[in-house]
Each structure stands twice: as C-alpha cells, then as structure tokens.
Length: 96
Image (cartoon, rainbow, N blue to C red; front, side, top):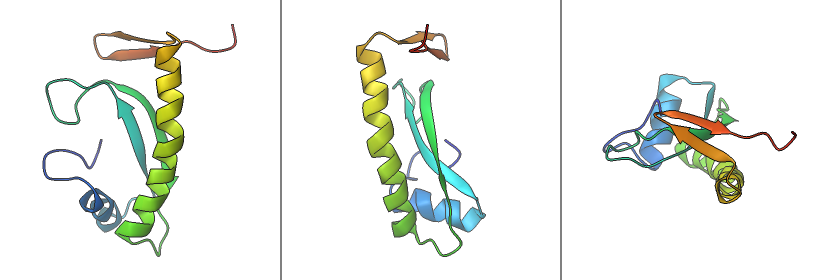
C-alpha cells in the first residue's frame, strides 16, 4: 500500500520501490471498496528487494508471492474463516 494509487501500477510500482531504496516489498490482498487500493487488508506477503533488482526481476518475485497468497486467502474466505468489522479483518486460526 505504500506505493499504490492512481497511475502507480505494474512496473511503475516496482520501480518506485527500487528508487526509494526499500529493502522489502510485497503483495497485499484486500477487500475492494469505492476507493482505489483502499479496502481493508486481508493478508500481506513480503518479498526482499535485492541490490541488483530491476523492475522486471522484482515484479517476477512479487508475482510468485501473489500466486501463493491469493489462493490461500480465497480458500480462507470460502471456508468462512475471514470476517470484517469496519476496517478490521480477522482470520480464524485453523488450530482451535
């Protein structure tokens, strides 16, 4: 969410992360609301930013994390494990 918003998508996001000097970036799964990139966050996954990264190499690593995280979140929603109250998202633990 630090590098999001109108016009900042795709390789622009990854280049912004590199240009800022971030050591970590990642992906976020959030509920959708009426504002761009604003909905309550369900889950996030971090990805390291390497010294020799380009926007393309970083994007590839973030995409791998997205491919893991999104199905996990969808499964939890489908199982009824995710609840939302105002902007607070709660995920029930699988171990009870």
